[in-house]
Image 1 (cartoon, rainbow, N blue to C red):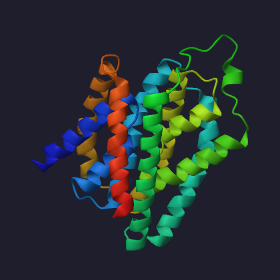
Image 2 (spheres, helix red, strand yellow):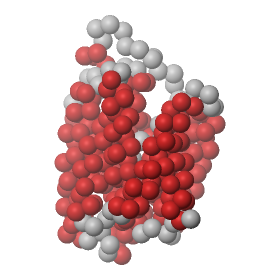
Image 3 (tube, rainbow, N blue to C red):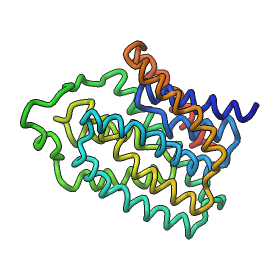
Image 4 (cartoon, one colour):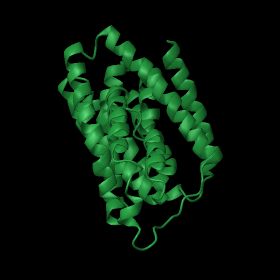
Length: 263
């Protein structure tokens, strides 16, 4: 029965990600901690590889549609992957199962969830309509950031956040991309966000695996549910009221964030 619950949790999170593009780490990690009693360091490590494998399929699909701006992905990865490796080195020295380290992880996770909730609610209430396509000859201009250093700095911040908490590559990543690349159409923003999360979560997840922070049987059960969930969600995306779902999702994330900060 417990096995079915893990598969169902994977399906539910996959469905939400398929419909809204948000909810991978920000939903799965709190579910594992609060509903299944998984230790925070195991929840984070397992969820990172869950996100990597889940988003890999999405990246392949988006790349086939030529919706991934690889230049933007390279800019963010240049900041996020070194930051992830540095954070893993610190965790390796400190030990992820140590009480003090777990306290830092749960507090940081709570703050990350509150930021994600705010970003999700803002997009639901005040999100501006972005162009769906790029005018001819505008690719070079649209993939140029406001300043060359900003993708490195924001990428590094997200790299640390994702490695510590498994949260940040979704709604926070989209918000950062909207700020840094205001001319980029929404499908390419989503494409960049999903594509740069793959190497980041893969590096961070494999790093956690080397620390013994991944529950492999649990990962298999979650993926067994999430892959059909994402497939169904991506087919329902045009039929459900996205604004209402994002509003409810932001309240759930805020509740989980407050609970983690206050424990």
